[in-house]
Length: 445
Ligand code: IFM
Image (cartoon, rainbow, N blue to C red; front, side, top):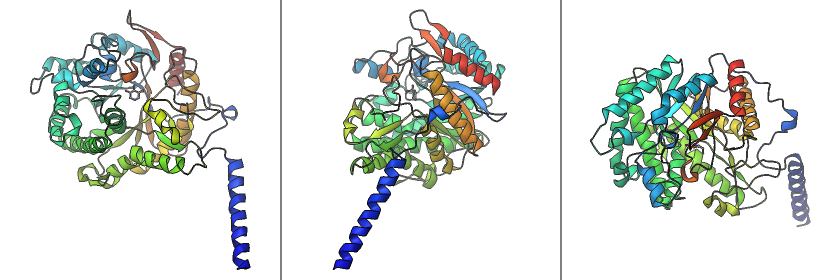
């Protein structure tokens, strides 16, 4: 008996010691760099690396009538209205792209412009998108086209949108029509933007249309969005096998707020799995959230990464419902509230790498009206990216979110993500200092 007691005491002592050492060595469970020791100017990128910026139709085009404009009214949110009036000013806005010197531009097509009523197609609108593509190519800017970036026609929403599996056929049909018109000039396509953000914000948190709060519905929508992506992928590949078709995945990392809490750690693992892991499983194994989606297996030619932050997860998870985010002591809170955590950019790349396809950074940026944080934010993230590429990760592009201030969904116009400041009264665009910085980085890399 004494032997057992002594042995147990010894084991307990060893565990205590190891824990103490690891606690001293690393205060937090996730990595943090000592940025004062890092020269973020030391970056280098491959010759054929694409520098770009990104926007989305509903956020910039203006005067739209779709699921989002309906939601804005129903929920009493700030209305998107004329947004950046980009639909009428796109040529001038493309001058801004040329001024920055980008070689790639990610934008989205607005389905509600093309098919405002079911079965009624507006050829003229499609021709405008076609003219945009021509103009980009003439400027030697690669168009990266997103087919669904959070918005779709209200008639399709009324039929249940992605919540109803039968609606997927209409979505595929819309994608095919766009592809038939543009794919002779557009090589790289994003089917759906941020599937998990779309599903959780619309069906769990209720901030996005249709403003529902149901976990069961969220899981169903997540599966249907994956299925829709897979069907679009298969259909478009059959039309043009050499087209590059991917998805833009928002990889948000969930780290335990308190490493000693028996709740924070499992909760963070669960959220990480729901947000990221379940989606990756769908692509790798054709199974998502305990459901077989065989079409989804290997349905990517590249993966788009949208990276913004990590979420410290714990008992205070209720804060997430109000979009408030805790941060570590040494972290800076961005205007959106979540911390600047460039270290996570590397982790997000590592998370996507096992998919075995090239990575395109389809979004990364920060809300910062005064432009005081954006330069440092940009430099840190590009340093992390440059190191990842040096270490062998196959990352082909970086698209800064966003080209210009625009309509930030439920946050309205309060969050300014632009390299260009937009005066929404006069529609004047002005390059911010961070825009100048990005321009210099592009020209020297
Ligand atoms: O503005 C959004 C974009 O539409 C999707 N990704 C995140 C951005 C900033 O919140």
